[in-house]
Image 1 (tube, rainbow, N blue to C red):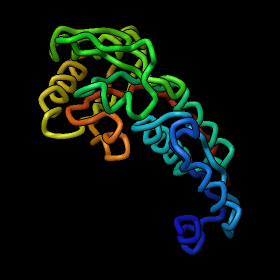
Image 2 (cartoon, rainbow, N blue to C red):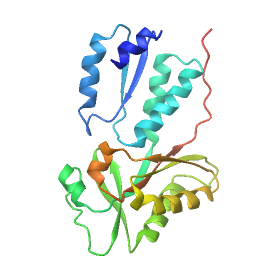
Image 3 (cartoon, rainbow, N blue to C red):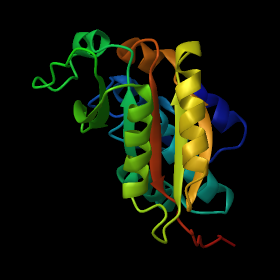
Length: 218
């Protein structure tokens, strides 16, 4: 229906940005819908989930608004998704285990807060903290290590899932906003991701801020 409505409103080509095929079967449905569309539909497999997909879509939409052709819009979406890093904590590991995407070596230690990252469809531990405040510091360090404060600008989006994560999200926002070279935004972790991470989940998606030059079509 989305493709049909866009065509009815004047779209002549569509670039459709999706959650990774290794994470969800949504892209398979998009392939079927694209075959029935009245206009060409170009599908982008971000290979990721959560706000990585949103970041790719936002950057792609910005390019399209500047007049970029579909091929360039797709390339920007793919490049943005590939450049994104992510780091997060969850209320408990049981939700991640049930989803089958937790690294088998990650058992979780009592009274610690594992700091995690999703890479190529698998969740791995990148650090361990004694408390949420230390976990926040580790997440901020991950963003800084990506180049922020060293001459590069980084876009960082802080995601929270529910009221149990708001305080940590606010601390992340405050610390990242105080870091040179970091532009911070907020987003809400949706139920499709929250069902796998559980209550109290909070994290950051970050990627380099490009100075994009787009050739406007005449």
